[in-house]
Length: 145
Image (cartoon, rainbow, N blue to C red; front, side, top):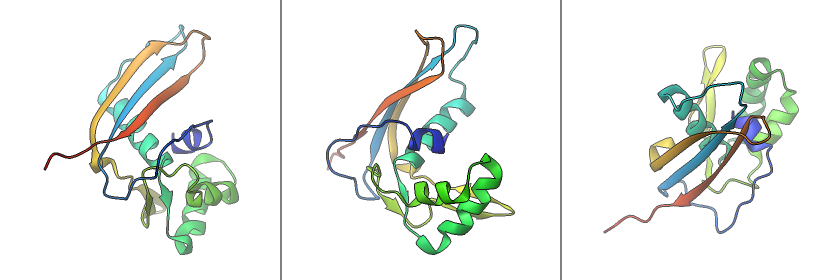
């Protein structure tokens, strides 16, 4: 999910958030008419976490190569492409974190800042062009004092 979202045409406006800025995520999942999709908890978590991770950057350059190698095994994508995506902060509106992803056994554990997601919504709709599609918005949330 992270890599697909990261490589999609995403428009970002405004300033990048600090790593402690609360935010809200609103997503619409378009699905082919031959499928039936509901926003079950596993799907919602995967979509929110993948979106949050895609709009953060991995700030630990020393570990990026190892994480990319591990992710290459899981995704079948070249490690160089993954390392570049991990470190790319062009769309990192949710900030840069030292541990976006870290070693876990022989794989990795993702650590997006989903704990800062104060509100979220996932709508599932039949796609007009009969293909999978994901669109959405991320907004900073102002805290009351």
